[in-house]
Figure 1 (spheres, one colour):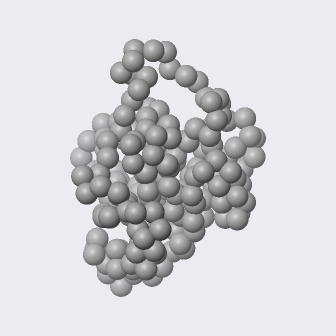
Figure 2: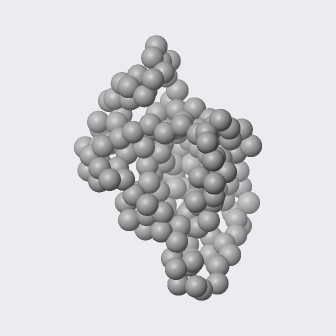
Amino acid sequence: MAILEFRGKKLTDAKEIKSVLETYGIPYECWGVRTMADSSVEGVLRTYDQDIKRLKAERDYVTEDVIALDPSTPNLDVLLAKFSDEHHHTDDEVRFTVAGEGVFEINVTADERVKFTAEPGDLIVVPAWRRHLFYLTTKKTIRCIRLFKDKSGWEALYPYAQEGSAERTLHFT
């Protein structure tokens, strides 16, 4: 179950988390953890097929994949460094956590952000153009289903680095 930290509070109730995130236009759902007879990519996608199809129809996603990161992933720290700085995408960043944990820090106002820790069973959609960062917890393991509106996927855009301007500091209040 997800953990949401915001304005000095730590929320773990899915309904409360959904309500806070909805206020800022960030979709969250709890699909739950399901038993899988087949843990291959195909098996994972088959297990959550109905939810994937519904979300694709509702939000115009066209493709999905499964990504897995763990301490044995080659160049894990280099890969994660690409997303630990504030960035955005021109498409939604959709993550359903199958296993492990990951943290999204998502800007919700000009000077505030939420800290969302995704755990197995959690789906979060970071809307296109929403500045955020991502990192793994100390477990350094995550397996996610990702959905995309374009078969080519998306890339992280770093407007501050490109503009050469100073970094903004956002706080958890």
